Structure formats: C-alpha cells, structure tokens
Image (cartoon, rainbow, N blue to C red; front, side, top):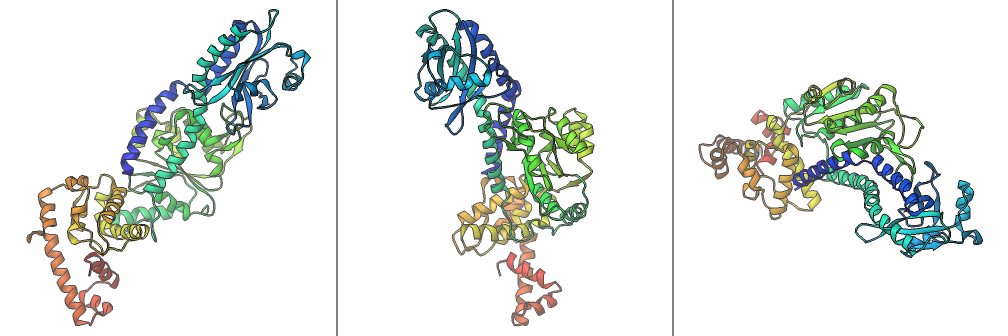
Amino acid sequence: MTDSIGQTLSALQANLDRVNRTWGVDKHEHFLQFFVRIVPPLLMAERCAVFILDPEGKGVLSKAGTGIGESEIAAPLEGSIVGRAISEDCSVIENELMKSEGFHQVADEYTGFVTRSVLCVPIRSATGSRINGAIEVLNKEADGGFDEDDAKLLQEVADFLSMALDNILINGEILNLSHKLDQELNRVCLADIPGEPLVTHSAAMARVVAEARLVSESPVNVVIQGENGTGKELLARLIHEGSGRREQPFVAVNCAAIPENLMESEFFGYEKGAFTGASANRRGRLLEASGGTLFLDEIADLPLSMQPKFLRVLQEGEGSPLGSNRMERYDLRIICASNKELHQAVDEGRFREDLYYRLFTVELRLPPLRERREDIAPLCQTFLAEVCERFEKQLDGFSNQLLSLFEACPWPGNVRQLQHEIERLVALTPAGQVLRPENCSPELLSSAPAAGQVNAQVGGGELAIPVRVEALERELIGRALEDTGGNKVRASALLGITRQGLYKKLRRYGL
C-alpha cells in the first residue's frame, strides 16, 4: 500500500513542481506590487496597501504598500480600519480621519505620511470560506472623499487579488505538508527493526556494510546507489552511528518531496517576512543538521537552480536564510542516495559536474534483494518478529513452501516489498498458525519467474529440489536430536553445523 502512496505522491509532486516552476514566490510578490502600483490611479488615490491575516488570526500584516519598501506594518484586528474590514467582512469608508484618533495615526508616525481618508475592503478566499486579508487606498484626490462606487470597484479588484493571495498563502502549507508526508512515509517504509538493522548473511551485503563501517570513521561525503527499497537510509544511519558525529542530529531529506520554489527556504530557512506567510523565523535543514549528518535522498532530483547554492555550502560551509543578509556557518557531513545513475545525469546536463565530484568522494552500491537471496530467510524472521510484536499476535513461523516462493521471486520492491508482504501475511493468518503461500498478494504470486517451478514447490512436488532438501534436513535434524536426547549443542556437532546454524534451521522449518 505504501508503494502506491509513494507513486501517487510522486505524481502529485511532479505536477506541483511544473506549476511552481512557472509561478514562484518571487512572482507572487511582484504581483502584489503590481496591484499596489495600478490601484491608486484607478481610484484617484495617493497610496495603496495590501494586508494579510496572520496565521493565528490575532492581527494583520502589510505585505505590499506604497512608500513602505520591504518593511511591514502590523495592525490590530481591534482598533484599526483594516482590522474592522476583515473581522466584519465589509467595506469601510472613513473620509474625515484628520478629526479622529485611531491606528492610522500610529501608521502615519511610522511612515511619515498624513492620512486624511481611507477606503478598505476585505480580500475573501476564492473558495469563499475565509477572509485572507484586506486592500486599502488612502487619500482620495478629489473633494468629497471615497464613496460606494469606489468601494464596489475596489471590491472587484480584491476579488481578483484573492486568487493570487490564496496561491501565496498555500506555499507555507505545502512545505508543512511535505514535512508531515515525508515523516509518515519514513515511519511506514523504514520502521525500526530490533537488533541489527541490516541483515548481512550474503557476501554482497556483508561487503557493503564492511565498507560503510570503514568510511564512517572518515569525514568523507558518501553517495549510496541502489534501487528503491534496498535500505539506503538504513545504511546512511549506520554510517552516521559509526562516526564521531553519532551524538549529533541525523537529518534526512527527500529531495524529490519538496517543490522547487520551496527548496531554498527548506534547506536554508527563512526570516520572518521573507515572503507572504513567513510569520516567524525558521531554521533550515542545513542548520538543523549542523554538527551532525545531512542525508539527501533522491539527490538526482535536486533542481539545477539549487545546485550552485549547495556547491557553496560544500566549498565555503556557509549560506544565508531566505530574506536575510546574515551568513550562517554549517559544520556537517553529507550522505546522498539515489536510485538513478548520477554520472548519466551529469552527461545529460541535469547535474553539475563540479557538484558531483564535491559530493561523491566514496560510492557505495546496495545490491537488490534478488542478488542477495541468502538474506531473504533471515530478513523474514526479523520482520516476522517485529510485525508480530507490533500486531500483538503469535504465529508459528513460515512454511517451507512459502520460503521457497520468497526465494524464487524477483522482488522489484526489494526489502521494503518483503516487509509489506510479511505484514499482509501476519494480518491474514490466524493466531498460532504457520504463514503459507495462499495468503500472499496476487502481485507476488504472479511475479515468480518460473510459475511452474514455484507451483511445484508450493504444491510439494516430489522432484522439486527444495522440497527434497527440506525433507532430508528435517529427517537428519530429527535423528540427531533423538540420538542426543534433545541436546542442541551435541546435535549440531553430529550434523557438522554450528549451534547458530541449527537454531536457524529449527526456526525455518518450524521445528
């Protein structure tokens, strides 16, 4: 199920990226400034300002306005004209402000402007479900001040502006949603496994883990290549835990999960007011990982526009939050992962060559599960114990037919697919029984490379080698235990295998 969620999320992110590449935060801000320029001549007013309601609903902030530059004016909901327009959802006309006291005097002291008359209308969400802010014009040039016709015209402008403002405000929500989705997918796909997180019975996997332990002792940047579901983040965590940075943060970021126009603020953070919706300062992922390790998954999806900024981080160890001239210093180790061939991305111009060589001092390649079949049975036991504990369920292990089926399948989803398959089997198997092939998913049963051979194994055909091997091993183990009165140490010696090997066979065959 998680694989389908991931595919759906990837498709949504791809569509979102295409939209955001043509309509970014900077264009939103320019759009607001465009309204501020054209509205005063339209209504024969001296100034214009656009306000938005802050996320907590306690006040309003000016996001664009004549004569205020990049600064902001915060107005209260109570005691200000803009606050009244928003809270009462109505247009407000005040033509004799020189004779009255109010928040307009505070704003005038800040800007050096003298406000004589104001027209302010609410900016309603395009969905009509909420008020996002307000737009106001100051000082009608003609005698008599603003009137209802002016209010109707400004409300039309506000209705068009609402569509742009909705788009601006949702940027911050997208980033928060991206964080939550990424955390949830990591929780589901990379659930904690008791004991050793990486099974290394196969020579191929043992070699990779040995290399990872070696590089963990050196402060080099590492790239981990491997198909989806092979355990790239687990290997990265292993490297982090074996390094001198183990007591510092391990921060994982999926580069494919962040829209391009939000990526700079995600990694470098931002200052309050850097863009519409930035109501408070926010630390970026680079600063969060400072002192520790930053894990960049799907690094091949890092946009070209962001790659020079990362190159500076690697070369100079510094960068600036969005909306600030302050330089932050970063002390971190970068581990990257990709399921794509990065040298091909370099050849195709999708990845900078200088960044490629800066990032990838050492390359580790995780083998797919089909190339490490010796790890399938131990992985099954590990996952079964973890899932049974999580589901609070007691089961009696795997049938040999099921393990034979598992060892014959190609596992395109690798270890992650195996884990999900075992979760399905545990859910569909009554307590106290053995897991059997009939409860496997149709996708798994149909993916076996040689259906006839697998069916013979599942059905127990007498000529199937795994079936005959199991029968012989069961008989020999039974005789050895009988001859030794159940003493497993002596039985393992008679069988010519280690005690650990005997225990594995006992668990495998459900003896």
